[in-house]
Image (cartoon, rainbow, N blue to C red):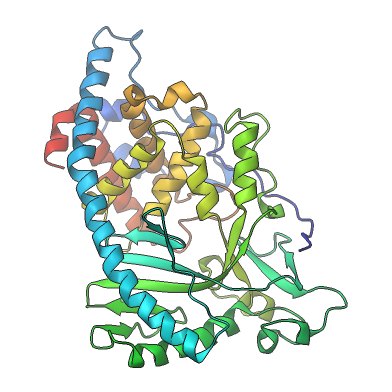
Length: 422
């Protein structure tokens, strides 16, 4: 595949420069309203005006080491009790959900052999399955044969790219000939529409038809299972061995994390192109935009979080989000947490920064960073900083989430024992 050149977007304010709330607010001397009332000018945001997130530093206070150890103790207890219970419950749900999805996809394949199920279990995990929340899941259905297309990401569609017939190639050479537009683009929207029709027919024929139904009023392919779970099934192409130009700025040259070997591994993982609605294109009507594919870096992101307490930190954040930050307007999801862990890795690049005894410091930093992002109403995608993960979220929902996150952070940091009730 040919990769067309594009200009990488400006580095995010998150890269390399910690943003956080005022240190006073953790001590209780400054009310939260001091953050909430200040008008936010995101376009002219000056990172130098923010304080470094407060951390436990033994040079500042002889009791800090004991306080740090106490927090880590309670976080580990919380992880062993609450996070592991969450993981076990989700693993059980995944098995239940995947039985239904597999049955539906078998019926789809009977009708249309080009849509072959790729939902395979490997090392106790299902390839292509992402947990959005304990009741929401996304299954990526990998499609075959994309080779006659050029992958084009020229920066004009934030978070998206198009697939265009290679010069001199004929439509008849593609497995997906009827989904190619007059301009030579492979239409993500047309493939998704066809797949949605096939899934709807398969649901009526599968053995679980009494407990599964299609979610209406969306162009996405979503199943509601036993009125408890929602599973989105997304057609996609896997792109390995190449790296999008829209993410060419990564890794930043002045950031020592990750090392060159890890960078090579991450880029070798590549990315996925998903046929799904892209919230960054809402309201746009041109054919190229409606036919665009959404960039996703799930495997690359997972590889970045290997080592130290990174995954444990993410698990803690997911559990806290599910239990305390599931709010009206859905301002926060687990992907926001995953993104902020990656930024925290840049701000603390040494492996020693991710030892178990630093778990409290890292969680502290991420929660404060989250408050700052919510206040600025902007959370840049880690690999695609021009893409704002808060785009389309109601400002009132982001403000409410900031207040709730502050209360949660303050409770944990001032009284670690409170984790027993959180």
